[in-house]
Image (cartoon, rainbow, N blue to C red; front, side):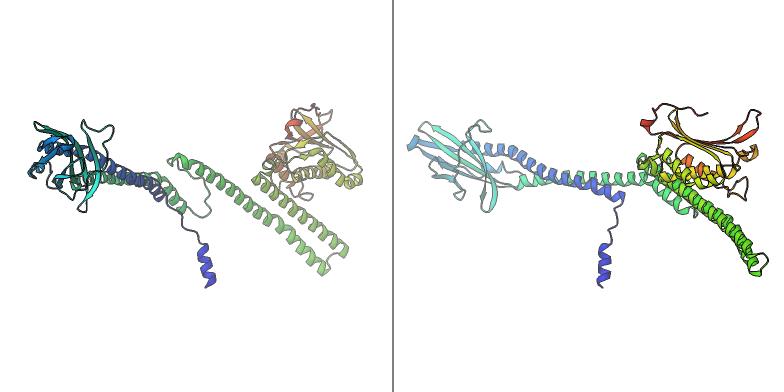
Length: 493
């Protein structure tokens, strides 16, 4: 139970679809802005309604002031008012709100109106909104919120002069209902706008992702092993880099699979023959058809040839692996070609001495952007070929030089050279001139290495004064490291 719960916890949540992501990313901020806008609109609407209806309250207060009389002057003034309620009914709109009034003296003494209405205790603002001594404020009357206008109205008559405080209060049903009505109408329009935006997002995403869905369907309908490039020119521009990267990956996979198939085909073809020969030789030795010493010598020769073929095929596969990785440029590694060639020549020195060759080597420091293994394998294969085809006591010359911004490896032997027919297929795998002395993979490995490093390889016959073939020249060129490309050129003849 614990393991199953732990496995369930590590499961990742499914990623959101593009449609859901866009709808959430667009509509959520829009809805938040609509909510803020609705609250702001409601407050602004109430403020505007207060401004409009406050004028009505002021008109009501002025209408009441016309019904006030006075006897006496100033502090001795006695105010009286006869205000019928019908005087306020003309200011009540649609029976949605009710109005109340109170007329008082400056000292708060009630003259007329509703005594429950609280006496005004504020002060007139320095800059009233109208040309009158008026103040507006919010209060509560009989458990309901009201808007109150206070008017300080001087009253005079033939018999006196005084100051009256007139308060007119109005309930807020009408103002609030109008504000809510405006808010509802606005929210309905904005809701329709949100629906339109959502519909447009869905349609646009559906249309934009149609090429991707079509591409996915085409991939699902492909046969197994089909790694041909994806072709979707109608896909959005933002998807094109992904398609190009996918095509590059598929091309690499195609090359990798092709190399694997070729390796398996060649391995099965090339190893089957020596193994079959080896089995026949062992059976012949068991039967006593040949002498044991001769049998062991033949078996040893067959094993050597099979081992050489296997090693060269593995080397060819490794070259292709390094080509796929492109590590020489990715890691910025450099190898000293001159030192590698000297090391390989030193390894082969017993063979050179055994064949009593006239061997010479001249080198200049050359740094090549390459794996050391690749240069070592290239040098070993070329020198092996030269040693194998140079007669006893022949000449073998190795030079490493710089010329025209290139590192040049030149190997000249005094063998029999190559004919024109063989020269056309010499770099193809298993195209050896003598199948008894080689597998035909050495020069193919050299060609793969040189192409991987961006170089060139040429084989040409050497001729004497009588235009007779006197040997073979293998010439390999590599690009130098930048700072060494400016060295003094040394021509090779």
